[in-house]
Image (tube, rainbow, N blue to C red; front, side, top):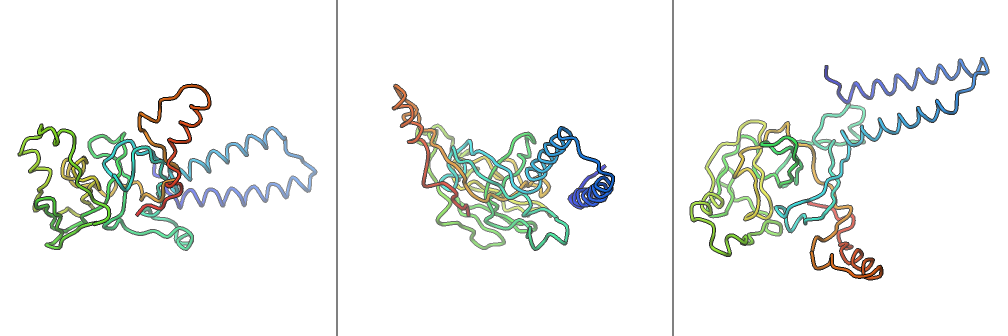
Length: 253
C-alpha cells in the first residue's frame, strides 16, 4: 500500500479537525486532559514531524570523499533539498516550488550498484541527449558542456607514480557517444580524475535521485597534522583549527 504526501497532509488536517471537535466536547463536559498523555502526544507528534521533514523536505549528509572537490570538500556537512524534485500537493506549490533535475544540479542519489549508499555528483547529461567525452571534453548533442570554475583535473597518486595503464586512462577520459535513455541522467564528479560516476557505472535512473544540495552548514578538515595535540589547551586549539569557518552556510551551486 502506498502512502504519499497528499495522504499524509489529508491525515494531519483531518486529525486536527477531529481533535478540535473532541476538545470542544470535552470543554463543555469539564473534562481535563491527562498531563502524561498530553506529553506523550507531543513527543509522538514531534517524532512524526521530524520523520516527515527528513523524508520529504531536508536531510543532512556528510561528504566522505574528494570526488566533488573543490565544490564539496571531505568533511563538509551538507543540507539537501529533498522536495525540489518531488511532487507536492497543488495548494503547497507556492511554499514548496519544485522542478525537474537540470544540467549543473549537484545531486544526491542512491548508488545504483549498492542502494544502501548515497552518492553526490553534478548532473551533466539529460534524457534523450547524445553524450560523448573526447579527451576529457564533454559534449551533449555536439555542444561542449563545461563548468570552468568547478571541474578540475588533478592527477591521482597512482597516476603520478605511473601505475595507471594507458587503457584505464583512455576509458576515464573518453566515453560514447551514447544516447541517454528516457528518465535517466549522466552524472560526473567535479574532481574528474578521481570520481566513480556515470563513466564507470552507467546512466542514473530518475527514481534514485534524492534531492539537490542546498548548502554546507558545517565543515571540518580531516588533515591529520591538525589532529595532533597535547594537553587540554592544545586540544581545544586543535578542534577550533579544524573547523573551516569560511564554509559555514555556504550556498552550493
